[in-house]
Length: 90
Image (cartoon, rainbow, N blue to C red):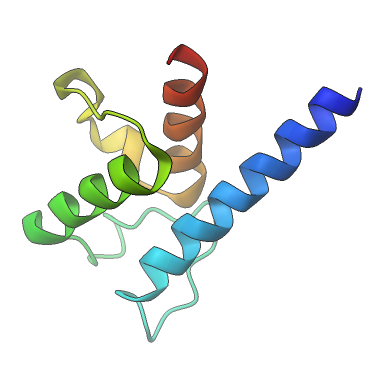
């Protein structure tokens, strides 16, 4: 039970870091965890590269070519799930 609680707390911390990073780019919009950042029109190729580099550095993960799917990056929730899967597999 304690492990599950720690994992939930860790994922909330991950979401917080991702939200803070994204907030630097979406200053006039308070992004919700489920919102599709591509549908909102906020993403360009430079931002996508910055996001991948941030995730790799901040969370000590490697985003592989097969991970470069829009579904993995479309929302805070999706990004958090990707990070969680990469942390578990490493």
